Image (tube, helix red, strand yellow):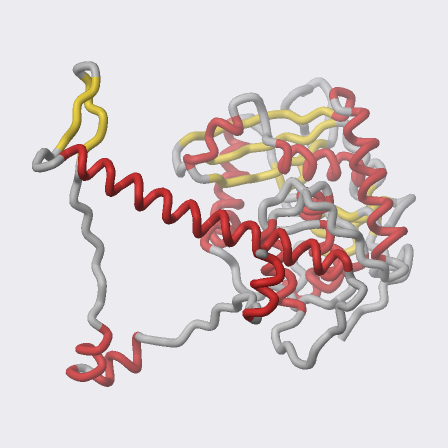
Length: 349
């Protein structure tokens, strides 16, 4: 059932907690209550998708989520699970290293623009950067795998930076600390300051405001620009339409015709590429003859190496161990684009 979003809608106010942030939901609120409440605005975790910086979500995801067209994510990925699991010990460790105290807060909205929301990981009432006076700051906690370590060498990467700057915009804080544990053992900490990113803060606000006021509130989906990750859009459309039925007329839909041409061109290139690779492999094997490796200018050029992968004999498993087969083997549906022969001929002529 689609939720009709109204501009400025928010939960009952609980009180100010930052210069421009009002707490509307405690951190102890049930998860389903929190998920419903954050649909009343754009939160900091939405910003990577709003700015097309996420590889998994797009502005269109944010639109459909806020409109209530997507179910809440009830299951955590492994990465998200461990991110939540390590949030508390990482926050405590940051506080220990920086000789201060942090505490969880909850869902915060901007006092002037209630649709601008943020759930701070932790609030700190004694910023370690200035011990001469008690001053507010906040802490964002992240965990990442070792493969992305280089992205953190110059500070938080773009998606995290956008998220933290949105928190600054919502709360009115002049800086927020970031701690990240990479690969389970590489500790990093940073400080993101508003005055170093003034133009970017304004840009983030403009883009998020446009998405909220021009698309989400009136119910007009944002256009797909081509910058979105295709896998993310495919996943979105599958979630929006899990039970497809009927047909749609595309007689005058030039976009559908262009997309079909691109699809057929891509399929042809994929097929041609596979054939070309196999033909080249045959030539390389011919060059080797009975040898196992080839040398060029006294250096290894290429070689033939055996690789193995475990391949179950499903027919034998079903025959000899039918109960195990039924328990372990399932049919997984995979959608594919089915194209009639006459259409393929039309677009490959």
